[in-house]
Amino acid sequence: MKINTLFRSKTSSLTDKNNDSFINFYTSKEKQSNNSRAAVIAHFDPDGIFDSTFLDYLKELNKINFDIYVVTTSSKIDTKSLKKCPDISINVIQRRNIGLDFASWAMAIKRNLILERYDSLLITNDSIIGPLKNLNNIIEKFDGYKNSLCGLTESLKRERHLQSYFIYFNKSILRTKLIHDFWNSVKLIKSKSKIIKRYEIGLSKLALKNGIHLNALVSYTQIKEYCEKMGDSYQYYKDLKNVNLNPTLFMWDILIEQFEFPFIKRELLTQDRFKSNRIKDWADICSISREKETEIQNYISRYNKVPKKEKWWTNLKMRFLLQKKAAQKSGQLQNYEKN
Image (cartoon, helix red, strand yellow):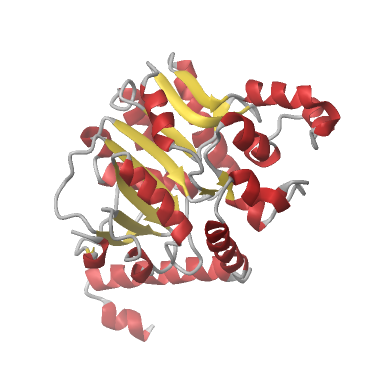
């Protein structure tokens, strides 16, 4: 079954153990595939669109035999945009916008019995644009590690941890009780700092505590040593001496050019908070075609036009949908609408 026959599930009012209600469930799959890998992708788009840049990522994951589960916190889903990607099977869960990525990943993992059905799992999100390099080489490398939690980059901020925009659980650890218990422990938390501490940092900390290795495509030590050798020619050289920097934001160009890094962070193109001297040349550094550059620029332009009030409006609409469904389920819709 193709994307153009995407349908809406009748099970869209289910609720998991943590009371994380989802609004809708869409799927383009007639039957379960034989793939042994699952990719769960956290998504948000202010217009509910699955932009071509995001669909490119899904296509690449599909090519290397991942079953794809997208969890979106958009208040609406533009199914027309999904039809632009007719060659892949995809499952889409729409949930309320609370708990950030870890709540989205946990919902899909538990709802679809991913830890029982698959040998390996990738958790990722739409904060990255790409891939710019061959992902299969990276995944095969990660599959070769024993007793390891894998990611693209690591951070030493607060404590050493893999950055959660791309974390891979290979066959050696996915079905362990430790990983099951971790995902079952994920709760709905509103505070971003608490989510980072408890789940992003907490996952790596839990792994290390239990003898599981952390393996990053590019370790922080590697990228830091390279930047130190550059001396003053590295833009943030003075900062590097005093603090641990986020490699995806402060070393993005070096990661791509010197370490075969496969993505560029969307934030660099939408905000560029740290005023990278080379951001104007991002397309050349990423070695993408002019056509693809135009697609990405159009996506960024649309994304940047989002009104500041959109976030609270999105949450309000999502809350309304949840309340309405609850009223329908309890047979109180008539009274609910009068109120």
